[in-house]
Length: 138
Image (cartoon, rainbow, N blue to C red):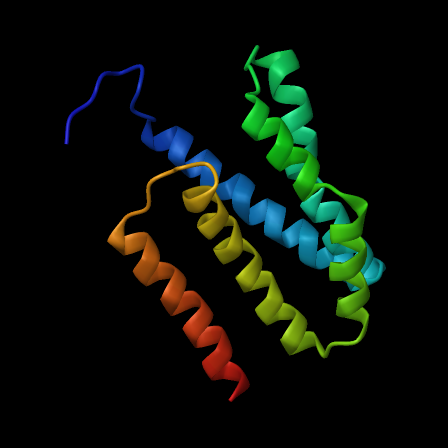
Protein backbone atom coordinates (compact mmCIF):
# COMPACT_ATOMS: atom_id res chain seq x y z
CA UNK A 1 0.00 0.00 0.00
CA UNK A 2 1.37 3.36 -0.97
CA UNK A 3 0.21 6.83 -0.12
CA UNK A 4 1.40 10.39 -0.15
CA UNK A 5 3.59 11.45 2.74
CA UNK A 6 1.01 13.98 3.88
CA UNK A 7 -1.78 11.39 4.19
CA UNK A 8 0.13 8.42 5.64
CA UNK A 9 0.93 8.49 9.33
CA UNK A 10 4.43 7.52 10.27
CA UNK A 11 5.19 4.54 12.48
CA UNK A 12 6.18 6.99 15.21
CA UNK A 13 2.77 8.65 15.04
CA UNK A 14 1.05 5.26 15.19
CA UNK A 15 3.10 4.29 18.24
CA UNK A 16 2.30 7.60 19.91
CA UNK A 17 -1.41 7.10 19.18
CA UNK A 18 -1.27 3.65 20.77
CA UNK A 19 0.56 4.95 23.82
CA UNK A 20 -1.93 7.78 24.30
CA UNK A 21 -4.86 5.38 23.95
CA UNK A 22 -3.27 3.06 26.52
CA UNK A 23 -2.77 5.99 28.89
CA UNK A 24 -6.40 6.98 28.33
CA UNK A 25 -7.60 3.56 29.50
CA UNK A 26 -5.20 3.47 32.45
CA UNK A 27 -6.48 6.84 33.64
CA UNK A 28 -10.10 5.73 33.22
CA UNK A 29 -9.59 2.65 35.37
CA UNK A 30 -7.64 4.67 37.92
CA UNK A 31 -10.60 7.05 38.08
CA UNK A 32 -12.80 4.08 38.95
CA UNK A 33 -10.64 3.55 42.03
CA UNK A 34 -11.09 7.13 43.28
CA UNK A 35 -14.71 7.91 42.44
CA UNK A 36 -17.93 6.16 41.53
CA UNK A 37 -18.17 4.23 38.29
CA UNK A 38 -20.97 6.50 37.09
CA UNK A 39 -19.00 9.71 37.78
CA UNK A 40 -15.87 8.38 36.09
CA UNK A 41 -17.81 7.07 33.10
CA UNK A 42 -19.74 10.33 32.72
CA UNK A 43 -16.47 12.26 32.72
CA UNK A 44 -14.98 9.84 30.20
CA UNK A 45 -17.93 10.13 27.84
CA UNK A 46 -17.78 13.91 28.02
CA UNK A 47 -14.66 13.90 25.83
CA UNK A 48 -16.57 13.73 22.51
CA UNK A 49 -18.59 16.74 23.65
CA UNK A 50 -15.40 18.65 24.36
CA UNK A 51 -13.86 17.63 21.02
CA UNK A 52 -17.01 18.59 19.11
CA UNK A 53 -17.03 22.01 20.74
CA UNK A 54 -13.30 22.69 20.25
CA UNK A 55 -12.77 21.40 16.68
CA UNK A 56 -14.48 24.40 15.05
CA UNK A 57 -12.30 26.69 17.15
CA UNK A 58 -8.91 25.01 16.71
CA UNK A 59 -9.29 23.22 13.35
CA UNK A 60 -11.85 25.57 11.72
CA UNK A 61 -14.17 22.66 10.97
CA UNK A 62 -17.75 23.45 10.05
CA UNK A 63 -20.62 21.58 11.65
CA UNK A 64 -23.56 20.61 9.44
CA UNK A 65 -27.12 20.93 10.68
CA UNK A 66 -27.33 17.13 10.93
CA UNK A 67 -24.14 17.02 13.04
CA UNK A 68 -25.45 19.76 15.34
CA UNK A 69 -28.74 17.88 15.74
CA UNK A 70 -26.94 14.62 16.51
CA UNK A 71 -24.67 16.45 18.95
CA UNK A 72 -27.62 17.99 20.79
CA UNK A 73 -29.49 14.68 20.89
CA UNK A 74 -26.48 12.75 22.16
CA UNK A 75 -25.70 15.22 24.91
CA UNK A 76 -29.24 15.67 26.15
CA UNK A 77 -29.43 15.43 29.91
CA UNK A 78 -32.29 12.94 29.69
CA UNK A 79 -30.07 10.46 27.86
CA UNK A 80 -27.35 10.68 30.48
CA UNK A 81 -29.78 10.53 33.38
CA UNK A 82 -31.42 7.37 32.07
CA UNK A 83 -28.12 5.68 31.29
CA UNK A 84 -26.40 6.45 34.57
CA UNK A 85 -29.43 5.83 36.76
CA UNK A 86 -29.59 2.38 35.16
CA UNK A 87 -25.92 1.79 35.99
CA UNK A 88 -26.69 2.06 39.71
CA UNK A 89 -29.03 -0.91 39.46
CA UNK A 90 -26.66 -3.20 37.54
CA UNK A 91 -23.86 -5.49 38.57
CA UNK A 92 -20.40 -4.55 37.35
CA UNK A 93 -20.40 -7.16 34.60
CA UNK A 94 -23.76 -6.01 33.29
CA UNK A 95 -22.54 -2.42 33.22
CA UNK A 96 -19.46 -3.58 31.31
CA UNK A 97 -21.65 -5.19 28.66
CA UNK A 98 -23.50 -1.90 28.26
CA UNK A 99 -20.17 -0.19 27.64
CA UNK A 100 -19.69 -2.51 24.63
CA UNK A 101 -23.20 -1.88 23.34
CA UNK A 102 -22.67 1.90 23.39
CA UNK A 103 -20.11 1.94 20.53
CA UNK A 104 -22.21 -0.59 18.58
CA UNK A 105 -25.23 1.72 18.78
CA UNK A 106 -23.02 4.61 17.68
CA UNK A 107 -21.97 2.64 14.60
CA UNK A 108 -25.58 1.76 13.73
CA UNK A 109 -26.68 5.38 14.14
CA UNK A 110 -23.74 6.65 12.09
CA UNK A 111 -24.76 4.32 9.25
CA UNK A 112 -28.51 4.94 9.44
CA UNK A 113 -28.59 8.65 10.35
CA UNK A 114 -25.34 10.07 9.00
CA UNK A 115 -25.09 7.78 5.98
CA UNK A 116 -21.56 6.64 6.82
CA UNK A 117 -20.28 3.42 5.29
CA UNK A 118 -19.50 0.23 7.16
CA UNK A 119 -17.38 -2.70 6.05
CA UNK A 120 -17.95 -6.39 6.59
CA UNK A 121 -14.91 -6.53 8.87
CA UNK A 122 -16.38 -3.83 11.10
CA UNK A 123 -19.63 -5.80 11.37
CA UNK A 124 -17.73 -8.99 12.22
CA UNK A 125 -15.64 -7.12 14.81
CA UNK A 126 -18.73 -5.69 16.47
CA UNK A 127 -20.41 -9.08 16.57
CA UNK A 128 -17.29 -10.66 18.09
CA UNK A 129 -16.93 -7.99 20.78
CA UNK A 130 -20.56 -8.11 21.86
CA UNK A 131 -20.73 -11.87 21.43
CA UNK A 132 -17.77 -12.53 23.71
CA UNK A 133 -19.07 -10.04 26.27
CA UNK A 134 -22.42 -11.84 26.38
CA UNK A 135 -20.74 -15.27 26.34
CA UNK A 136 -18.76 -14.18 29.41
CA UNK A 137 -22.07 -13.59 31.20
CA UNK A 138 -23.58 -16.98 30.34
